[in-house]
Length: 237
Image (tube, rainbow, N blue to C red; front, top):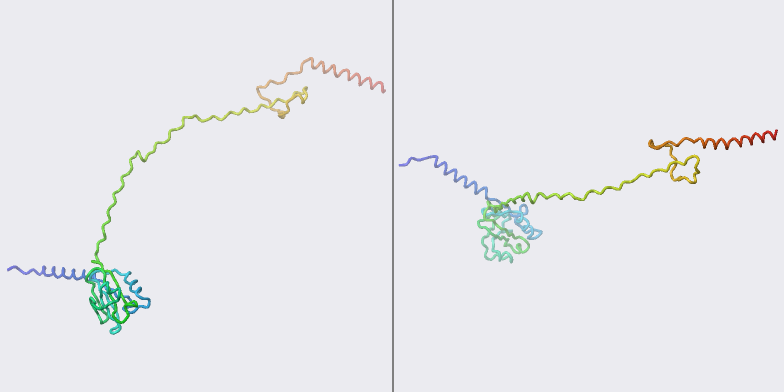
């Protein structure tokens, strides 16, 4: 007879406890309408439509309808009956509050209150249940990295330098000023467009010394004038 192994029993118990823990963690409790509860909303059916749009319902979750016995109830009905608020053949009916319903199947689920005209004035709820709370999102297809362009496409050939020689600016010849007029030449016959300058070029030749004939002519012009002056002075004396 095979010997009993207590470790095997411990392992089985741990596996069952883990599975139960996972189911409990996956199960979520939704209180319909939150603080509003399950009643006739003042704003109409939009109150429950807005509440449902903010929830995520999965298979195994719980719906809790909070209401007062004898004033409301909750019935699950088909989509066709939901539009006309007909509760003749409900899928389920709970008359005692709070009523807790387990979402066992995925897809659309519809709930109404069968009291008088409560459904027509807004006490109705439509939800969509997902198959599992652990739905894996589709894996994103990795993008193939684009191969870098060849070096020839990156490096551009620099433009060849122009063979045209740069234009040489025209040389400007400085204007040579006219030399000043000599003392024995009248200014009318001299070019007076430029003022006389006292700076002489080193290479320019100095003016020639006065010749003997010039000195003789000057002496000849001075002597008669001197004698004339002496003669007039004697006459007056």
